[in-house]
Image 1 (cartoon, one colour):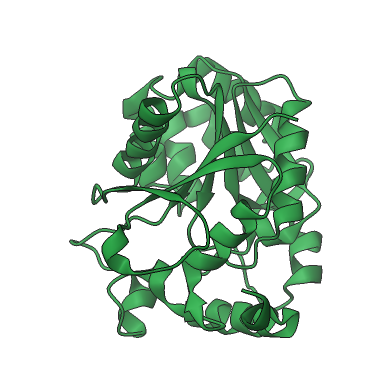
Image 2 (cartoon, one colour):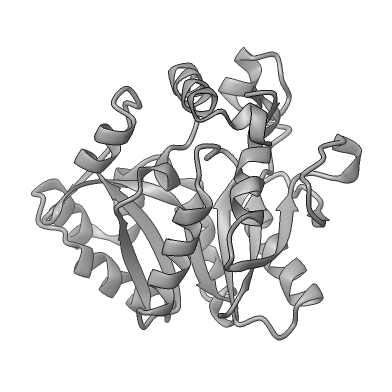
Length: 264
């Protein structure tokens, strides 16, 4: 069974503080306490308990944060912007594990993540022919698991989906078309703004709900010179990111119900 490096994106901007962190009196969202631990701890816990992950990297933290993750961590300095943090993670993996072919990215704000979900996602990606894999969750699946999450959904031919926060990437293509990737990441909170960036045809299809999963995959291949695949997850936890106060309270309740504070 192959194992892979995982990069947790816990970076932040000193120029644009996260609204949730500011509301909680914190300088970083991923350090907000949940069930007695920083939010990012629970993401790392799921990764360290996964049978498919070997080395964990965290971008945006250091030993000075004094968080005991229960495993060896390679820390990568914060780069103050999302795209630069992603690329810093890629560079760190290439420096420490030059023979690695693929890597997993996980957002640092999905504390409800399960190790079983990580295993499923990696195994699903392994069985698909592609270069990078983007997770999504159907609206019915998300609302059944987290009925008060109030996520935003994108309507496509196949249904309504929200983006997930696990990504599996072939390292060799990570530097493809960096300018476009930087712009897409900068607009990641607005699907319509991303569609505008990708052209008139995409906007029309999006507005009339004619955009399909296959369209998205074909577009990524044309623009990024890499085979992108959308992975529809039956597990909602990989898409339950914490951006707003009600989502924080929801996830706190979920982790306390699991008894995670006792098993950490």
